[in-house]
Image: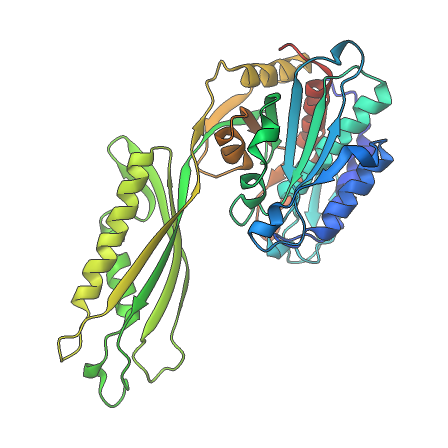
Amino acid sequence: MPKLNIDRSAALKRLVHLLRVPGVSRQETQISRAVEQMLRKLGVKPSQITRDRAHTHFGGEVGNLFARLPGKGRLTRAPRRFFSAHVDTVPTCAGVQPVVRGSWIRPKGKTSLGADDRAGVAAILSALAETRARGSDHPPLTLAFLVAEEVGLWGSRYVDRRILREYAMGFNLDGAAPTTATVAAPSGCLLDIEISGIASHAGGSPEKGASAATVFALATAELARGGWLGKVLKGRQEGRANFGVVRGGEATNVTMPHMTVKGEARSHSPAFLKRIVSTAERAFQRAAKKVKNDDGKTAAVRFRVTPNYTAFKLPVRSPVVGEYRRALRQLGAKDPETVAGFGAVDANNLCAKGLPTVTFGAGGRNAHCVGESCYLPDYYLATAVLTELMTAADT
């Protein structure tokens, strides 16, 4: 069993408090202020706390919050370390009332909990509290509380690349088990599709119309038959594709003249990602040509692709992964599992900006779902791992 010499009562109190604070994506003012207040209570000076203006790029309320702390004692001149977690939650967390029972925190009622990623935020703050309470030497530290992760990693996307150059390594908190490290994640892109049909009275002259809904149905049916939706496997290549938002039509008696579709695709291979996207585009264009009225006029499709995040892969023997392993071993925890996930994390953007960053969890389970929970033994272990990472520097 891991040896966790932390104040669990204080760590739990911190987490429960943060779970109650509103802060869905792009509306993080209240949670950002709550984190700042906690930092000040832990002795962080106002001059060491800053916010950037990342939110101005995507219509948010407030930017990323940073606490920049000098090193102490024998580690004063050690390379600076970067610790991050995102403060935003999904809309289903609105109004959450966290309830602690035994080893679990669960929401009261039909909401999500917000352990994704308030558990990560609380673990970083609790690790700082442990470091301060012990009077431990530590390297220079930057604690980053990022916004708008859930809607496209927007906060980390606009972290200034220049400020990351001085950091030796980064540790990002997001996910479930603190003994599982995400060392690779895919590239992803957003798909915006506009289908233009031809309106006609569906009861009087349906033959004069060309339905946008039919175009969507034909295209997705073709993609599904070919194995290009959901989990996409072609030989040794793997990816994901999904159309999650579909809107169209205003009246039941009109052939649908317009539909908008929003989707995404992702893969660890940029070449295979491009193949997934081009296959989808061809399917929609073919479907549009098949849907025509009795005058021979066809529907039309506009297909737009927006790159969203870039794949990364950390070598298993990289210094940042090695330091994470060392911290777990120092605590007597099992050796970590390293995974190449298909979920995007803020480390996608941090690694792309030149900061090697490993991501591990802080106890969350069933993220984004009603009934989401947090397993407290994992949360406490994540806090202890972070404390070890904050107070030791082998690089």
